[in-house]
Length: 218
Image 1 (cartoon, rainbow, N blue to C red):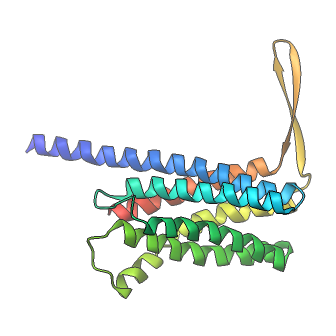
Image 2 (cartoon, rainbow, N blue to C red; image 1 turned 90 degrees about the vertical axis):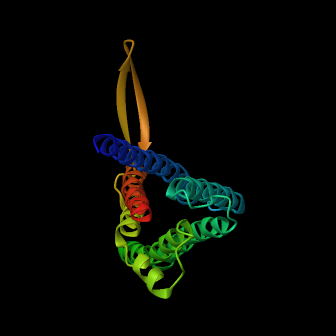
Image 3 (tube, one colour; image 1 turned 180 degrees about the vertical axis):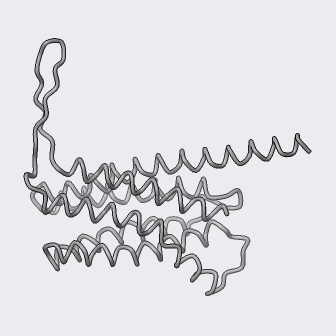
């Protein structure tokens, strides 16, 4: 009995560690790719080349993120299933429409309404991901609706994105400087306020991904 309990404890600890590790790397990917895409479109002049470059970064991040989630979801999940590419494309498209909606509405109202729409879109995205991660369970409308009602992952990521957008658009001053003394020399570093926005997005992505994986494996 004690051996069985010890083995079960090791398995649970391994699963928890795996979820935390995956959530960490997904947070890094989201902060780097979504933040990079957002920075290209907001700080740089809006041209065809910057738009295409930003879209490439966003799509790469979506594929990478989906791969992490699919690989860590469950033993029954097949990360090579072509349907995961659809999930990746949907994830990238959600962010594009989120920014377009915010720009069309403008101001604080645009930031908040776009954030609300992002919650709904991410709910559907994470529901589809959860269904794909459990291929042996029969598909039903009720099963999909239960996953849609799992608010935490979508709400967490949407809060991070809304904070990043608000900081990028409304923060004053937009840039600030900090100094560091190294080997008797003072180095001045100029940072944009979006650094804070990217940090908030990373933290929220970590929390949301951890909750998503916990739900998939439950």
